[in-house]
Structure formats: structure tokens, C-alpha cells
Length: 298
Image 1 (cartoon, rainbow, N blue to C red):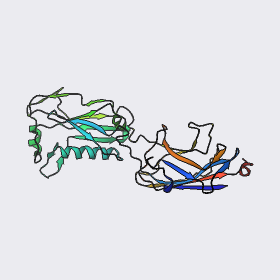
Image 2 (image 1 turned 90 degrees about the vertical axis):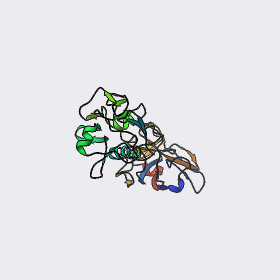
Image 3 (image 1 turned 30 degrees about the vertical axis):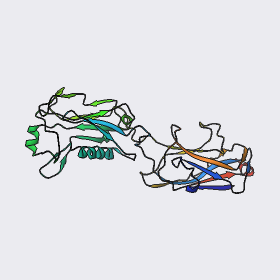
């Protein structure tokens, strides 16, 4: 039985660290029918972003109480729902779309949250008016160019047709569905609301589009799998930034594709057979290649 080890030095440039190419030091080798390949050990860091421009899931809009539409464009990264909420508030701070409490704390009027008991994401929008601001001693932030509305107005989260809707599990639409019209501060909202509004996702949130990695290898011919060069599949372990290890308790041997090789490739794809982007190149992949005599007892 032979052992092959691939590491970051084998990564193919320009593949987002998802393809490794191993060159046999002794030149060509001949793999014969009856030989098999298995994953022995894999160590890597969980560093695949879930929100990216390439995934088409990094943008949405919100409509502020003055009727303006404002874009939220997230830099590529890994965001859970609390992080999505934090970034929404970051954009609102940049736009000065908040109020300031007497304590100096910022008061936000739209949030993205989690409802664990419903396995859902929440959109919450909170109303403001001159009367509410006076009662709660809320004031405009320094430099704000909008004014507090006379009528009770809630902001709206606008979910577009891109893949962000899948991340939070909401259908394309406005939450709430309403129209803000008129000249501030006397603008109106149709329909008119008298209370804060809460919405639950209508489908299971797919916070990350990558639920599992498929490891393919150009040495193998897996007649029972699609793709037929599938070697092993696994789910990312731990949280983003953590190192994890995949070490099968028992080797899962796959038949080789008989041929003469001077190099071979190992690739990472996702559960939908799409190439994945891996930020951290530090990884070790250990494969074992059986000789024909090793398999006589199988």
C-alpha cells in the first residue's frame, strides 16, 4: 500500500485553492485494474465564504421612513444571521438612519433575527413618529438630513430576486408591502400601520450555500457515483476559521482508472457539483493507493 500526501504546495494557481495537482517524483507510474484509492486523512480550515458576489447573494435594499431606497452590499465573507444584522446596522449608521437615545445608545428600526423555535429567520421593523421620539427622548444623529415623520412610519426590507432571498428564507418582496409617499415630515404609509411589524421566513433559510464538500480525484473511476471521479464527501466541521480533520474509521476504497500517470488532480466541489472557493490554502490530504495483492482478501 502506497501513501500520497498533497499540501498547499500542490494547489493550482487561480483555482481559489480548490484544485491540487500532484506530480509523481519518479516519472510515470502505471496503475492497473484491481488497484484502489482511498482518503486516509484530510486536515484543513473551514474558510469558505457563504456571502459573495459570485454567489449572487450579497445585496438587498431597505426603504427608510422618508421613502428613500438604500442598498446594502456586503463584502465577500462568512455571515451568520447576527452578522447580517450587524452589517445592516453598519450601513444604517453610515446613512445616519437611526435615532439616539438619551443614554447615547443608537436606536435601530429594522433588524434581522433568528427564531429558533420556528427554525426561521425574522424581519422586524419598528415604527417611529414625532410623538414616539418625544416620549422616548430620541433625537436625530448629528449630520442627518432626514426628519422624524409626523405619522407612524415603519421602514421596509426589500428582498430582491437574487440569492439573498435563499439565505434568509424569504420570497422576493417588500416587508412590509407598503408605499411611503408625500413630503416629509408629513409622509404617509399605505397601508397605514399602528404597531411594529414582524415577518417569519417562508422557507428554510439556507445561510450557507455549501452544506458539504465532495472530494474528487482523477485517479479513480467510481462507477456507482456522479461524478464518477468522486472519492469522498464530508461536511465542514466546526465554525468558520477553525481547523478540522476528516479521518475515516475505515478506508473507503474506490477503483482506480487504469492508465499511466505522471500527475493527478484532487478537487473540492460542493453538493451541487460547483467549484468551491477556499480562503485558507493550508491543508493536507493523505491518500492511500492499494496494490493488487492488498485487495485479494476484499
